[in-house]
Image 1 (cartoon, rainbow, N blue to C red):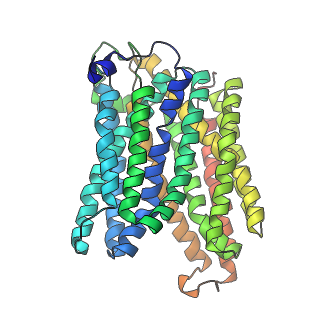
Image 2 (spheres, one colour; image 1 turned 180 degrees about the vertical axis):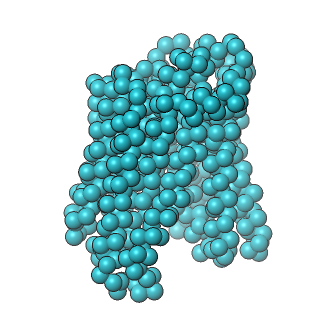
Image 3 (tube, rainbow, N blue to C red; image 1 turned 45 degrees about the horizontal axis):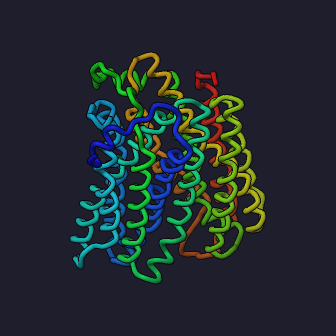
Length: 438
C-alpha cells in the first residue's frame, strides 16, 4: 500500500487514542518554536547583524502582518470547500510542511547582498513562509474540533497541545540565542528547522486524522453565505471580540515586562526572563486543572472564571518592588494564561458545532481563519498603547536609567491597569456569549 493510499484510508471512527492525542498535540511545539524565534529575533538579525535600515525592516514587518491576516480567512474558506479522497485538511498540511520549514530556515540564511537585495530576499522568503504557515497551522487548528468532538475529549486533547506549545515558546526565545551565539545564524536555522520538520512529520503521520463521513455530501456553502453566517453568528461575534481583547492584554504584558524590570524594579534587563519563566512555569500545570474544571462546568463558565483570575492577577503587578515579588505575581498570571490557552479553542469548537447544527456545514476553516484575522489586531493595539503610555509618562530613551519619576507609574499602569481594562472588556464579551450548555 502506497503512502497516499494509506493517508486516504486512514480515518477516525471513534474517540482518538492516547497516542494519537499526544501525536496531534506535538504539532504545537514546532509551530511555537518557529513563531517565537521569528517574532523575537528577525528584526534584530536584519537590523543589527545585517545592517538593513530599521525603517525598511519595519515596513517589511507591516507587510508581513497584513499578508498573514488576509490569508487566514481566505485559506480557511477555501479549505472548508475542498473535497478530495484524502479529506479537506490533510492535503493542505501534507503539502505545506516542507515549504514552511524551508522558508523558515532561509529567512536566516540570506546570500551576501546589499541592503536593498537583503530586504527583497526578506520580502520574498517571508511571503512564502506566511503562505505556508497559514496553510499548515490553520488546517491543523481546523482538525482539532473534528478529531475531538465533545467537551470532555477537547479538554483532554488540548492539554498536550498547549504544553507542547509552551515548551516551543520557551525554547524559541531561550534556545535560539544560545545556538546563534555559539554556532552562527545559519546553523541555528538548520537545527531548529530540522527539529521542526521532524516533529511536524511525526505529528502528521500519527496524529492528524480526519473523521469518516465528516465531510458533507452536498455542495459547499457559497462564499457570500459563508461570510453572512460567520459575521451574524450570535456566539462568534462576542467570542472573537473577547479573544481580541485577551490577546491584546497578553501582548501588552509581554511588551511591558522589559520596561517594568529595568525602570520600575531597577533590575538587570536579563531578569525579565525570571518573570516570563514564572508565568510559563505555572501555566503548564494549570492547563491540566482548567481541563478538569471545564469538564465539570461548561466552556462559558470556565472561560469567565479564567478571564477573571487573569485580570485580578495582572492588577497585582502594580505593587511589587523586587523581581521576586513580581515573579510571585507572575505565577498567578500564569494560572490565568493557562486557562485562556486551554479554553479559547474549546469555546470556538463549541461555536463551530452549533453552527454545523444550524447550517448543516462544518466550517472550522472559516471560523479559525476569521478569528486569526481579527486577533492580529492585538499587535496594532499593543503598539498604540505602549507608545501612548510611554510618551505620556515622559519616557526618554536617551536618559538611560535616569528617567522621570512619572515613568515608573506609567509603566506600572501599562503592565497592570491597561491590561485589566482590556480583560474587563473580554469578560463582558464572554458574558454575552449565548451558548451556556455543557
